[in-house]
Image (cartoon, rainbow, N blue to C red; front, side, top):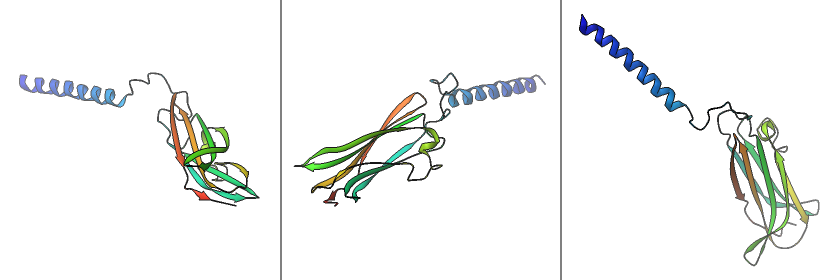
Length: 155
């Protein structure tokens, strides 16, 4: 009889040890307060997709599209650059920076609403679109960068 009581007690102790280990491993040690962001406790993943420069209304236009997982980040800053190859060096000929956040970055909005563009007058040369983004979410920053394929004399 004494052996049965000891086994039950050991089983209860083992249960609580395992439960405590699970709770400890599932808790993020750096986040002891409620998250004050739209993304909750999980990090939102975003991507940027530059499009090859194209002619539009007598201008060379560089466009880039962004997309983030729902519910979107606390903040997203996107810089779109139209660049020309000048003797092997990419030189920025037009650029603009755009800021957005939350659901405006997700598929809840159309691809057109998540596309930003810059442009300049038509000119000869080889061009590309270069895009950089900074994602701010859950008090953390991460950067993204991507370049399109080249386009020679788009006009």
